[in-house]
Length: 452
Ligand code: PLP
Image 1 (cartoon, rainbow, N blue to C red):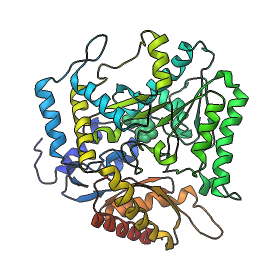
Image 2 (cartoon, rainbow, N blue to C red; image 1 turned 90 degrees about the horizontal axis):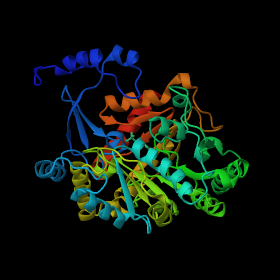
Image 3 (tube, helix red, strand yellow; image 1 turned 30 degrees about the horizontal axis):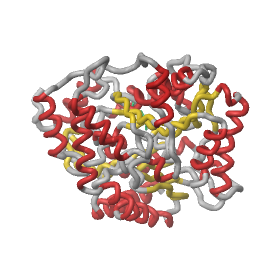
Image 4 (cartoon, rainbow, N blue to C red; image 1 turned 30 degrees about the vertical axis):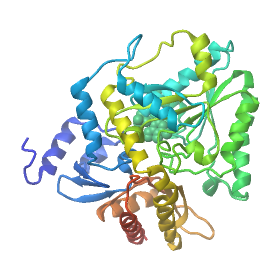
């Protein structure tokens, strides 16, 4: 392949069609139009094989938090690959980048979440936390506590474990049977499902459905409740502020572990190091990935709180669990360099006090648009709910494909965002500038106008 050939997009598209099966893609539909081939990244922009530049409003897949082209991250990987490209953490050895990373993560997690188990993807972190939650109760002498509770429309990855725990209806129909002893409760989506209640009342009501589910299953049989602080892939569902503290109270009352899936919210996205801090609760375990290495190399982790860690260490014996690349040295070195940049550039504070509010306020200027029913978000994550009419509130028929139309107009005009049904998802890099926020608000308005 002549990689620099003019119109290399067509060459790549042809090979792609013939040999490449894409994740979460209808291949027949993709083959009819061909993939957009992305070849480079610069700051907060990606560049395709035709040289077209797009402002990346999704930070890749909610992960490239420091933007593209960060030399420090590239050098951290290169230096580590030269010094020690691989050694494992199994049995009785350890590599230094993963030890350093564990200590550095423990510094930024909420108090008590000080023990770190590494994996490579969010899905593996979730699988690990699911096994750990059940293993904790085995070690505690209560092996009958096996049930896991999650929410409808949640996303926890696409392995069998992640699919079973997740609440994505269409996804759950494929490739089963799924794992047992997993129950789902309705999501805390006030704008879509909370008519007739205040947001605060609705948050409490949805939390109490978890209590009902625990009582229905029997508290002695429930191991853990899992939830994303903000449901990202489900369309940026931001719960009312009453929700998480009440879920935490319920979990404590019935002695059920609480696991926060911080794969998207972690590492500054919501203006705190972790989403649970923004929403005022402390989980027993947290999963994390994505922003951990700014997406430069795959790495994920489970942060384990004192209660679970002490029990597993004292009574668990060997936990027969781990991955060849748990704590891969190059990925860990990039994650350490990511933390260095986040701390040196005070990016969490920047999201909380400066660019996050600027982005949220900018987006809210779109509320006057006839298609925009509501904007949810905090920090640098937001969801725009499209409506057919505001009064009375009427959603589009799914056949109208309103979200996809807005997304396609936006991409055509230089801004990459995602449609989850008729909710537009935005999650730009944490280093996005004020001017780039202005650009994205302008392009989103233009895309909405073109969809009218
Ligand atoms: N959990 C959450 C909340 C996610 O958003 C994702 C991915 O988007 C996952 C888990 C799965 O992560 P991965 O795709 O790295 O397996």
